[in-house]
Image (cartoon, rainbow, N blue to C red; front, side, top):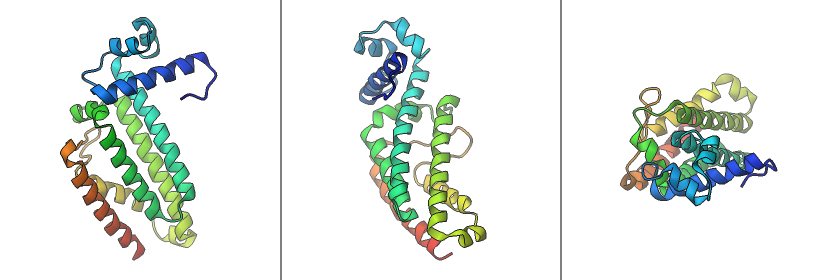
Length: 205
């Protein structure tokens, strides 16, 4: 729900919430702008005023969800005493999000070889924020002497890249692999095991 008192921002937030419900229940391909306008008792012209097409609306929902996720992550990092807790939180949160709203992500799954720039940018922003938050937490955990000896950001990025190879990987810019629904639990279990191995390896530095 928007905290803004601006009528346009409130209306935009209502559209995003309605679109999220539609995309989550029916998936991207089976949702139309007409459906969303009807759910809101809104004219198509007004809906298109806020979002010129369905892909921009979908990207808007992703940005909204990403903002909520990053808020939760920042809160967790503030409370976490170790990098282990923060990494496992990210892994768990991502698994819960994909598992609970698999239909919502069908657009990414269907377009994984040619993901639009506006969606790719949101994904990149989320990843960069994750790396930044965890790097700073790691610095606080290990101290400045350790930070001068090792490139903490690079270590964090290496862990993320290693996890991506388990079921989900980025081979080229804007190319992703999205797992099938029946693979989710297996991939999650494998990622948890790999993450524990990687974090144990950090402790030996």
